[in-house]
Image 1 (cartoon, rainbow, N blue to C red):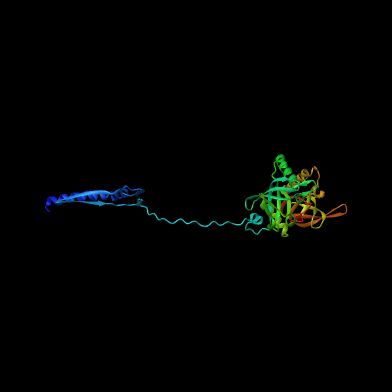
Image 2: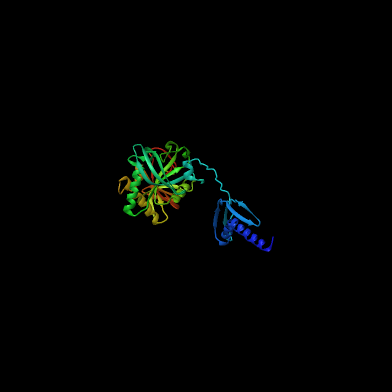
Length: 337
């Protein structure tokens, strides 16, 4: 082969390489262009290259199929992790006890009553749990939240009206014991309370749930007692006449300051408003609503009047005054209210 033929064959062979290498060229362009680029190359049709060589002519056919996905990320390392689907675990429904108390060791909880609907035989009550920030619907037989012509619905309506008229902030609480709540069942979005197995009190306070809990906790562990004031002024500064639940006797209660005395008087006025007995100095005597001061008290002396002696009790730690509905039926959580 002379030099002329050699150059001719080299040129033709280069053309074949350029045609067959078009795929590689595309991939190289993608890589040099930077950024993220995905190129999918599918089957390339067969190409026929005719190579003439003196003194003979022959035909070669090249068929190449390239299927490849190339993804380039500039200065980025990409690690792909296989997708894993975890099995779905269905948690069993929580009991009312778990919902209200969570992981706490509380034995009771004050639930603020925010709504009441009275049916023929049941009270449908909306309550708010300040511990778990939960609102719930509960149902309880009407006779368990009533006394005479006063029921829990009347209490809530009267409290709301009184607040609107006087700019006060009294709240109605259902204080619910923990024992027996595992027997409650949920039906149509409401929790049906096993009334004969639960322990509870219904009371009114202008304090928050934590303060109500603290007062009742001290009452329960013996750090506080209940005295029942009326609005008659006692013989000493900041004193009111009242009744001792402990000794079952008429007493004189010395409060710490005039603010506490005014608070007690306001509770007595609210109780009279609910009962429809205005200017009654001692609504507790009616046996439906009790006005109770929860406090740590101690006897500080005796008072003599008309040949009678009365014990004088001084208030040390004042945990507030409350209006308590005396239940017609049911189990009282705190029987000394």
